Length: 254
Image 1 (cartoon, one colour):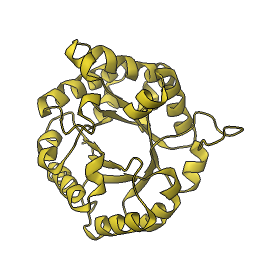
Image 2 (cartoon, rainbow, N blue to C red; image 1 turned 90 degrees about the vertical axis):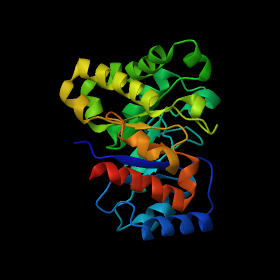
Image 3 (spheres, helix red, strand yellow; image 1 turned 60 degrees about the horizontal axis):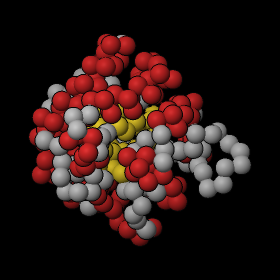
Image 4 (cartoon, rainbow, N blue to C red; image 1 turned 30 degrees about the vertical axis):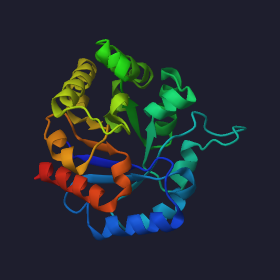
C-alpha cells in the first residue's frame, strides 16, 4: 500500500517569525503521527532554519527548485548537494510556475530531476496542462509529454525513488480545482504509462494532486484510488487548514 504524502509548498512566502510560528503549530498538531508522510518546502533562505525547527520530528524538509548543475559558476543557483547538506530529502522540479514564468522546458526539468537523484534527493516531478490545453482536449498529450521527457533519461528505475505530482495549471491559485474524477483520470493515465515500463514501480509510485487543495476538498481527492496525497500551496501557510488536510490524508491511511 502506498503511504500518502502531503507536501506544503510555501512558494515565496514567509519570514523567520512567521515560519517559527507555523512550524510550531504544525508540530503541536502531530500531523504526521501514525499517518501520512508530511513535507514542508520553504524558500531557499529559510531551509536551514526550518530544518532546525523540524529536527527530531517526523516532518521532512524539501526545496522548491534545484540547479541542474552540480557546482561551478552559476550565480544565484543552489545545487542538489547544497540542499542535501542543509537537510533536504526532497525537491520539487518542473513546477508550472518555473515552466511558465522562468522558461524551464522539459529537457531542463529532466536534468534537474537527474541532478536531484544523483545526490540522493527524492524529486517531486510536476506535470500539468493550462486551461487552453484542457479546453482543446490536449490534457493527455501535455502531461504525457512532460512525464516522458523525464522517463526517457531516468528510465523506469528512476521513478522507483521519485514522486509525481499532477498540477492542472488552471487550478493553481485560482480557487478552482479539478474534480476528484478529473484528477483520478489523469493520475490513472500517468500510472498506466508507468506500468507500460514497469508494473511493479507503477504500483508503488506516489502521484500527488496539486491544484487548490483545501481542507474542504482533500478527503474527496485523497479517496481516489490513484491520488496519493497533495502538493499544497496557499493552504499550507495556514496551520489549521494544513492540519485538516493532513487529517484527511490520515483518514485514508486507516
